[in-house]
Length: 115
Image (cartoon, rainbow, N blue to C red; front, side, top):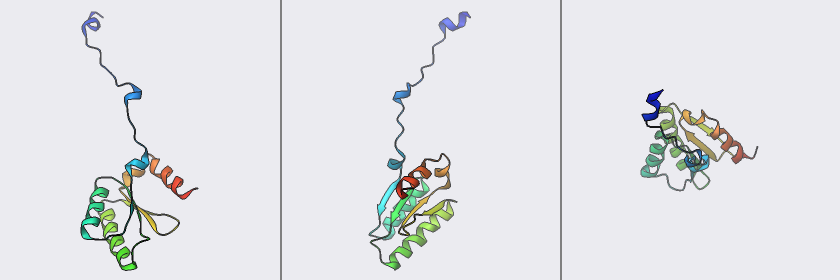
C-alpha cells in the first residue's frame, strides 16, 4: 500500500477532450466531371487509404462513366472492398469493406436515401 503514495497517477483524457468527427466528414462526396487519369488515381488512392468515396456520374458521358466505373471497380476489387449503388442509379459509393464494420456508414446511406 505504501507504493501507491509514490506512484505517479495515470492521467486519462477527459471524455469531452476526445473529438469524434461526423461520418459525413470522413467521406468524400464527388460530382465527377473529369475522368482524367490524375483524377481517377487520386480517388483510387483515397479508397486505398480507407476513405469512402460517394461519386455522382450525372455530368459524364456514358463512355467516361464506364471508364471511371471500370477503374474504380478494379481498385475496390484489389482491396477486397465493396461498391454500393444508390437507388437513383447515378450515385455509387466505393469503399474498403472495413468501413462497414461499426455501422455508421450504413446509417449515412440510410440518411442519404431518405429511408
